[in-house]
Length: 342
Image (cartoon, rainbow, N blue to C red; front, side):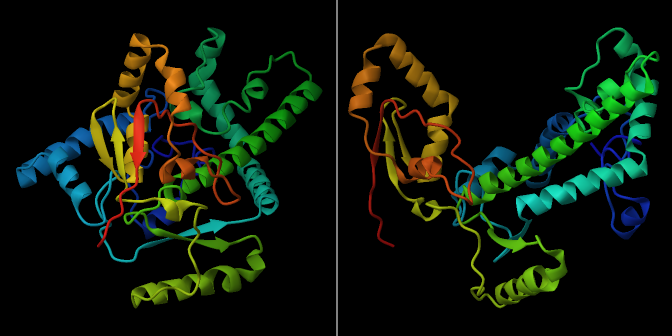
């Protein structure tokens, strides 16, 4: 959302002073009055341009390079090996009650900075005609930012509304903004868990949790542990502080052997097997077989093999990891664990 010109408060844009300290790109270069530019638009332009650039520089198709990287030591179905040795991620987390209080305080800071007036000015300049036509769209462009939907009723209240009615709508908007902010924070935490903790592998950096619940103990709970971890990694030593791990993550077998009878494929690795089960090609063959032989569903369910390690991980849940991402369709597939001697 920070690609849009103006609307600095609602998009939590970096200040001019911060931009002077470190170069920032693509800040405020899109006029929200004339464009609904999103990350999808950026991706659709950037990805093919990058592929063309790589082909021009190397003479090799981008897709072939990616395939070679996945096959390198430390690579897997998600991508190639990590560029640097012993990278790590510091995940600052806090007790949810403490975090909610800070998020509420942030909303109050936004209100003090004039976020409602900023939203009102934008509505006047851009959305007046759409409101009259009842065609306002809060699903695209800048309207996806937290704040627009929450204050819609207040900002579009009829002129005949009493001050009490307007104040009530304003208070409801503030509470809705706080709820949306908390929800977004939880979504960010879930993303970290799913992206890094539920995908163990050689090309996933270690994640170290640092507790910021009590900021008065910052040096004790955040700074000192982080420095100790960095010092150990810089010496290629195992840090005394263990990284955050998902329950069952260690069960993923990178060299396990799976056979999909439907697709006539042999899949090596639990991660690749899980990806195959979710693929369009596999689901196409599942639907095709069901259509040809509806009775196969029952027979396959009664003879279904035990879960692979990857499927077991997806079904596991604990305090560290969010619930699984759904059941896997194992129709027409067999599992076989093959021991590997290195």
